[in-house]
Image 1 (cartoon, rainbow, N blue to C red):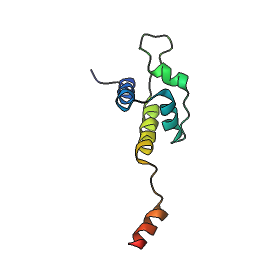
Image 2: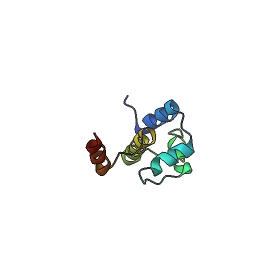
Image 3: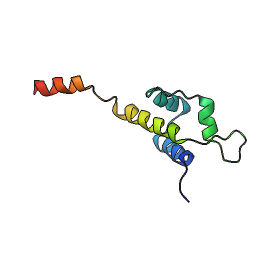
Length: 87
């Protein structure tokens, strides 16, 4: 049975030891607004009445924000040119 987006998101949260506040911050790095209640709904069990499925867009934005959170923002093209000129 393949993993759902919810399963992937849960595993990333546990592996990276992320709290709800961290996830909200990570999503804000890519201008994706999410609330703690939405995050809580994603992590509920499937049979819970307030369960919410983690869509592709949500997971994609979280992963893009996670890259920025862990590595920092991409340098602008101008910055790259300046570094090359200094060499």
